Length: 602
Picture (tube, rainbow, N blue to C red):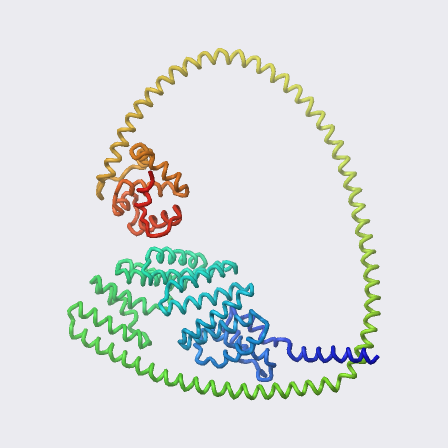
């Protein structure tokens, strides 16, 4: 009896202490976690309204704090202190839970990013990636890699940013999230734009726009169009800037950067001396409450008035703009001071709270230890009694359940036997009916064969006479066709020769090439350039008919502007097609031009 009591004592103590460390998660935290992705505002309300948080055990307290930081982050509330997230990270560092470690380090990086501490943010995101690689949470990995890419982008290390954004894209694909790809493609395109690789950037922006538009992400699509316009600003292509800015406004009238878009449009119209249009878009920001917008409004107004020759109005507008810029600087100084004071107060209160919670946690631990000792003996005897009783009851239940299962199996087998007997009878009757029907069909088939043989004999005699007549007609027809073909071939050769000459001297304003002539273009290139079209199609089988036509025109040395007119497309579209032919059809990257590739085909 004594060994049993000792074993029971050890088991009960282990049970009590394990319960002390693994409390069930409160319902409010579970609800908040369920709402976090779709309704982060509701999750934040639940967490902020939760009572008794200070009495939670250490692990649940850390879990609650992590959920609270996540909810604030998803509601775009700027983090002003890192004291709370540091306590969360310090707790989960000691836990054997890679997912919670990754999550804690991720939000430590988010907090430090808001605090503009890029080095600490990058270090936290890197540790988060290390732990998330031990899990299958690809969505969290995508978030970590995206934020890491953002840190490098902010530091203007654009090549490193692209590497991390590509990792984020791969993680999203593994997570089965094709919708959020638009955000990643947009970030990669922005990095290439800053590297001045505009063709890659434009192609990726277009891919991102297609995904956003297909999934009805209006705000994302508008911002992508806005980013394309910014890229064209770098290239000083005012017409394209205006086109994409307008598209952005039309796509989503509630565009987050609406005022900035209108200011940019106003300045671009000013640069091309369309002052009325510039004034129109500038007027849409006149009633803004933002100090930044007001400063920009009067600054651009001053430029417009100066270009219009209204120098007094221009000077007045410049003065108002400078006044708003001074207000912005004063406000930022006051906000920075208030932020420092608030950060200090928050850290002080948080540290005091943690000390109180630690003391309470120790008091509760002592209480549980005393309670466990006082109940130990009673639990030991109760445990032994009920264990014996449960074992007997369990054996009885198992025997009854087996008997019920055997009876059920016998009943199922009887049902299956009856069903098989019915099927055999039905199949036997169907076979008999099929035999009678088959005999009737064989008799009808014999009659049909006899009639067929008579018909064949008559046809043979008729066919002999028709064959002789047909041979004579074929000879006459063959000679006539050969004559026509010879004439047509001569005419075609003359037409093809004139086509190659017309293409080489063709200028905008000349008659367009007919589609019937285009159909002979590839054959003409084969005849005059040592089977160039055939070699091109063999070397690059993914090329379409239109791609081959463009390559043939380039091989003739015709300029891009002329090719665009001949193929009835815009100059920008032709450049995009050239890039698509090289990368997607020919699968060639690098600095080699399409002309060099075509010259190497021999």
